[in-house]
Length: 88
Image (cartoon, rainbow, N blue to C red; front, side, top):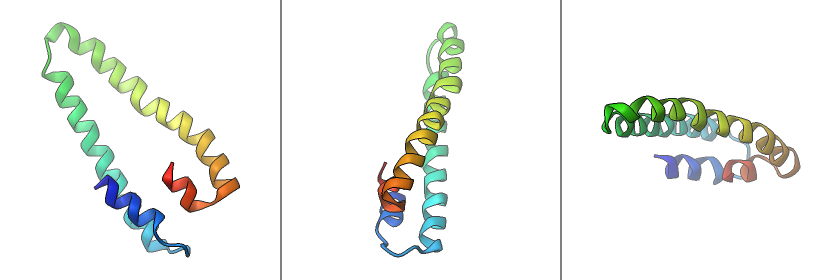
């Protein structure tokens, strides 16, 4: 799903809103599947380690991506455009 969404988002050279909408739905579905898989892995280990790994999972994975995406994504979009920004 992630590869298809990226291909749909980066393929068109003209700005087409349908490509952006399809890519957003695909990326959201891929993100949710990743979160479910990571949570399943955390809860499958020993009970003593679950709390620590769950805290790391909740705090680090989404937060680091958002912080990096905000600064890097804006700069790349302004300097190089939508298609290049989608590749990142």
